[in-house]
Image 1 (cartoon, one colour):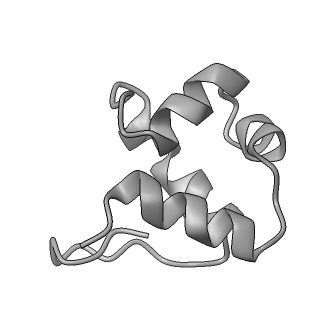
Image 2 (spheres, rainbow, N blue to C red):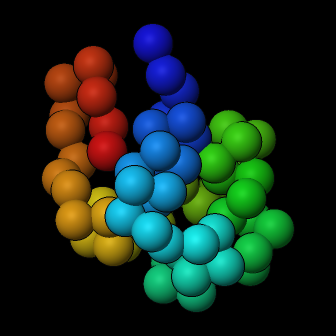
Image 3 (cartoon, rainbow, N blue to C red):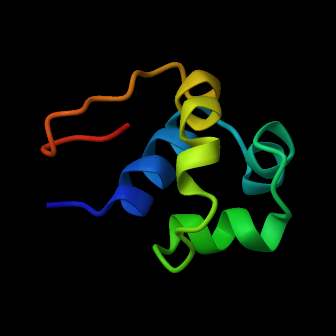
Length: 68
């Protein structure tokens, strides 16, 4: 099963959005966004999750099987 960061990265690439663009749209530093995709930064996750879902044109699923 893919990690959250792997799923976000795959959707971002599929949508043709760079990490720098995602960082700007989620109001994170580029390094913080990169860390999020690498599953090493969780302190910002709850505050940016809705913006990530909006930018990637997907929804947040709450059933523990899939988030973004």
